[in-house]
Structure formats: structure tokens, C-alpha cells
Length: 81
Image 1 (cartoon, rainbow, N blue to C red):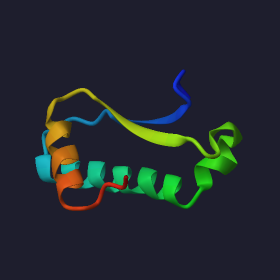
Image 2 (spheres, rainbow, N blue to C red):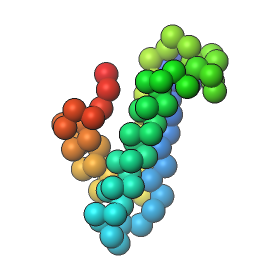
Image 3 (cartoon, rainbow, N blue to C red):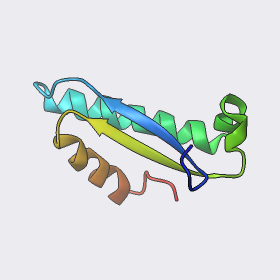
Image 4 (cartoon, rainbow, N blue to C red):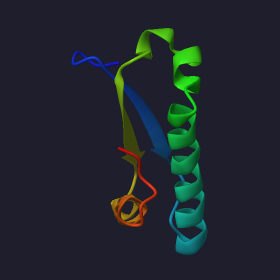
């Protein structure tokens, strides 16, 4: 959690981008799992102090290419607000 009472989950994008299509597919699947974890309320079971807080999913990536995945992810209605 941060000082603003927001639970922060960090998605690690540590793989190389040699196979762009496979990497984007894996990253999108990982982001979907993180969002589902929050939406199903599992975060409160794992981190009880997060109950009732807003949640931020942060992408830690070795490459700026991950930004394009996030952009498409959000623009196609997959992101949750």
C-alpha cells in the first residue's frame, strides 16, 4: 500500500521482446489475472489491510513496448475502473 491508502500491485514484465506477439499475449494474460484477482476480492484475503481501498496495478517493464500493451488493453475495454 502507499501513503494515499491505495493498494498497489506490481506486474513484472521481465521477459525479452524477441517474439513480440508471444510477449504481448503473455503480458496481457498476466494483466488479466491481476485484474481478476482484485475484482474477485482475493486481494482482501491475501492483504487484509487492503479491504475497501482503491487498487492500482503498476507495470514494471524493462522495455517501453509494454506501454503499447497497456494502451490496447485499456482501449479495448479490458481495464476495470
